[in-house]
Length: 218
Image (tube, rainbow, N blue to C red; front, side, top):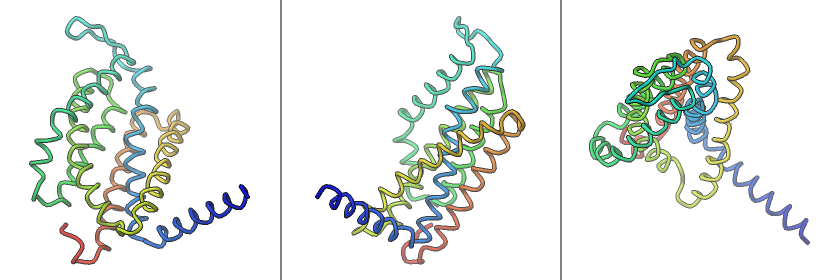
């Protein structure tokens, strides 16, 4: 009896995923999200190793920073900016062209992480954290609003489940880039991050172009 229920449950999930996969624009949009997450996951993959190995030890405000402490500082700056500026940035982007806001935000987000993968001095790293944090504040709400538009109301459970599971591929891509890191170096990884961000922009805008005019305000 248990096996029958499991089989039926698997069939139900498989059928739901089949329905989602038939929605081409949603799949393309999700692929863009995977690329964005692969950029973000560089913080705990290549960037963490890069800072641990090549960060120039320095003192700031009487505190000595090595690569590990620098990564913690960058994460703290990102968290603080997200907490303090979510409301004002949300008000600022209201009633603005969401396509432009998304592109601007994703560009800043990508450039910030590319800088962190390449530079090794405290001022530039802090600057990069500000860039990517404000970029995140700009692209996330615009992308989330369009994600909701792409999901039929009566099938949102299946779409959210698919979106959540497939986005884990971002971790796989970020981790796999470590294999090529010894050959590409920090400049090569930074360049790859830029291409990932560019790919995310192209895929997302492509998906949104497939939305009928009466469903899109972009």
